[in-house]
Length: 244
Image (cartoon, rainbow, N blue to C red; front, side):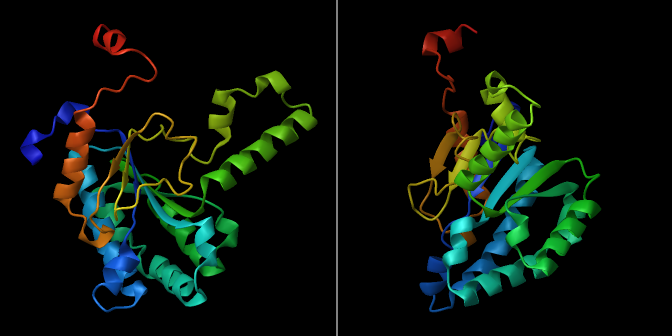
């Protein structure tokens, strides 16, 4: 599989909806939290593989704002996983910088502190940025951005006509990185689930039935090969792209 990948066309930014942890566990007669723990091992594998392939940004949908409606026991277990698995080793070993997008104020204080500590410790790593979307949803992000821009207009810091697509992008939490080239969703569901809606306007989408705990390096390679087989036109015609 790896021999089929064109190393000159590796997606710069891959975003992943890590779906299927709970179903994976239940099919094995286990609690859903067992699947979330298994999913952490997949994060380690895929992070290392992305670095090896030359991906520069990896964004992982970890916990949505809607997930706060899940049973309290599952939420507590997920927060515990964040605390126990944010190890500097995986980041330092792979020279990966850790970042977070989302409403961090809703997270438990201990989780906030651990996230900030990990971001501080990895701030100088340069091989890849691994971004965790935690307590995140795209509608929340866009709403917060609209509030920020409206306040700046109200205070006279910008004019109404200054609110452009570029201005909105610059005020999103993802302003420090390019939009995803490739969005992968595991677990068999065919929806976006309120994830990076503004940013994936022209991303290539890839859906697979494999549950996240079973998602291996070969599965990532297959997604990249699919991405490389497509022509990205960004609204242009095929002829315009080919004659570029």
